[in-house]
Length: 220
Image 1 (cartoon, rainbow, N blue to C red):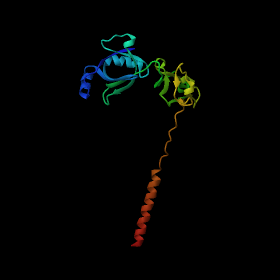
Image 2 (cartoon, rainbow, N blue to C red):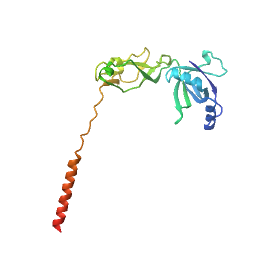
Image 3 (spheres, one colour):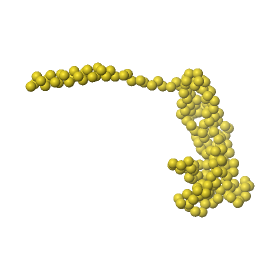
Image 4 (tube, rainbow, N blue to C red):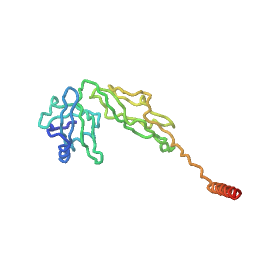
């Protein structure tokens, strides 16, 4: 996947707001053997690439007006995407330039596929302990996601561990293989508090009131 960029000349908050109003997103480009660069990418083009690539698939950046040949492109991963606190709007992006010959570590999301038969049969619930996992590999071997097959959860209280999933060749998992990814079990029963007998409390309070009144009269 390719994405074009333009070198950003005007910096600062005000300049960034103007760019976003024009359908552009300010970004930072940094990483392997390059100095940090302030750049700008088109919002629509980036959103399309980001939807397909996520944060762990290599994309290739090239400068607007420059050659699109392999030597002019920069292999990057989308390292960070910052969203506006209240609006559904991307405010800035970090692109990390990688060396295709050097391994990098990153987090890859799990793709939960199929369904445990116990969900329909016994009303069981799925408890997800992990949504992503940290891995290491050459940039070209980075998987977009890793599948976790929920149909394997065919017994109550059964779990799927890191060691149970298929890891692509050339990818190293940086998490203990005995770590639980997901498990299945019955919902916990809610403890219902027994109703308080209000009448008995009322009678007890009345008795105490009469007893105090009797003591007061005897003292007089």
